[in-house]
Image (cartoon, rainbow, N blue to C red; front, side):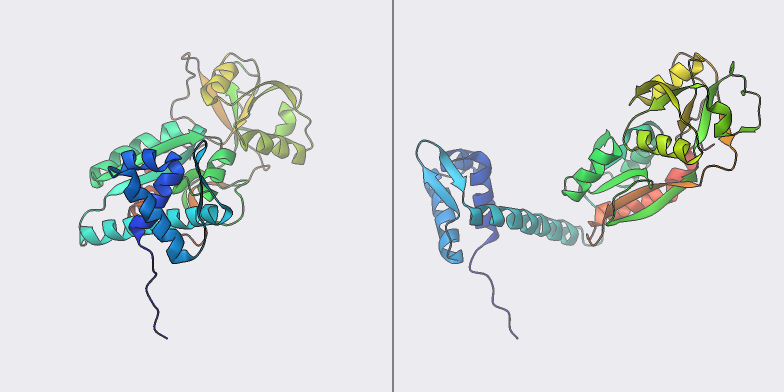
Length: 308
């Protein structure tokens, strides 16, 4: 069966999107370097082609989308993104990739994973612009699902369903202690041995939930003394022997931010191997540059990471 071409153009969609974003034909025209009449005609022609009213025109309130307009707006974003991607991919003619990549990284991993990754990748692909965000894994995966990020780097634990991933390296939970702690000279320890000690808990989702779940499964009721989403604050508090912490990420240097010594101890027979991963939504076709970033991360991250 022969498919017919649509009666609307990408330019009409672009001007419709600009109108909704700007809130008026005049503001959209200024943004797009056109006359207000030209923008208004493009939107009217788009409505006529689709046979629906897309916007409500009100002098006092400007332009607001109808229900059909809101639906089209989402479809228009995807179509325009795909069109830009086609142009970028084909214009390279097999040459170097170019364009932006939005990367999210779980905060405790960002200081150790991102610098070497950014340095190496931008040297290999100087025409790619990396846009970076760090934060809690809960927030980052939500932004990933909403299409605000291309990929997210984090831990496999507690990731939502519907994500594809590549393993970057393996690690496991360890107990972080001060060198003054009574167990500091032990080869490995059990969670039961820490049951009576104050816990300095990293509470950057999903880390806090994971720590409490780990202790619960070991039959330990923790004495939570302090909580913080700040990785270095937790390490500094432990270095002052104000409690212990359970962490997945291990800093390369066994010193706190205040230059006090720390020791990382393996936990006996209670933890499983965990993965640091780079992930993206299932069924989403990665751009050529995002795919290159995934492959570069998979091939290089493990060499620059300290693990327990």
